[in-house]
Length: 324
Image 1 (tube, rainbow, N blue to C red):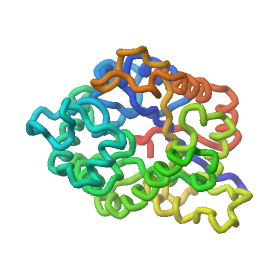
Image 2 (image 1 turned 180 degrees about the vertical axis):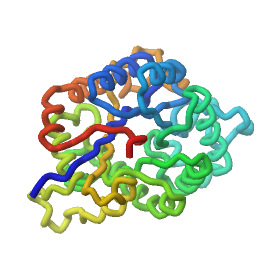
Image 3 (image 1 turned 90 degrees about the vertical axis):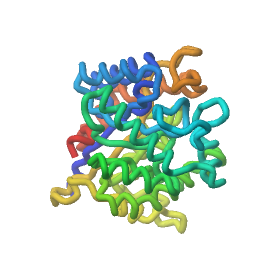
Image 4 (image 1 turned 90 degrees about the horizontal axis):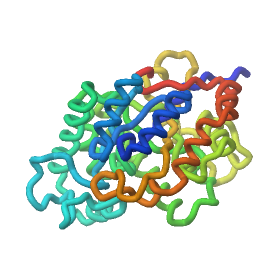
């Protein structure tokens, strides 16, 4: 049987985090290794990133941030539930803890998200082609409802649903990371009815949890792509196999309605050059991951000619959200 045609959106996250991140992302775009970027409007190099995207005509969306650095909304009340005593967001896990404890006010979440959309428009001169959540906060309970309303109100058509086929078979992940990813998956599945209700779309499948940093290689990307397009794996008959419906639940992009057999996939990536200490970040300086060589490893993998040959062999066409 002929291979299905695959449209792959390769999204470079954290655009605007620092100048060295911007440089790496642009290099990847110019080499045809990524096709889309996601902008942190509270990143220290966000203005530069927006100018770069205009100069090079890079398709750009909003990486909504509620967990790292400083908020951008100047009408948040003093002592807002979104920030700690120092005025910074609560952090990746701190945000989730505050949410579980009922400490976050959703009206403030909505204020901040709307302010970030507005700042994105001011920086880029356009609405985002898509909008996702930094550290996957957009699929969390309560937040997902506000997020969906903001997208709908601004007519932003696309988001990210991080349900990755094959995740359950990645036993090499550390227990802590595996647990976090499985919770992200469950939150994402629970978000689907909310996003559908608001007419929001996303690709058929998602890749990016199992290929972050040093876990990324041409071989791991090939495996992830095979899982994403439904290629049977040796373990697919086991009792822990993931049902194909995990992907089917997320199949509502425009291309799925054309009847041409095209599959759409998003690959989340974080290429760049290591951040220098005290340069970049979202107000608190760069984190450890940003200062590590993991970002550079992703850049080198994504620009490997072997990966380009794989795309050609598998009939994979890179595109952006605006092309779906």
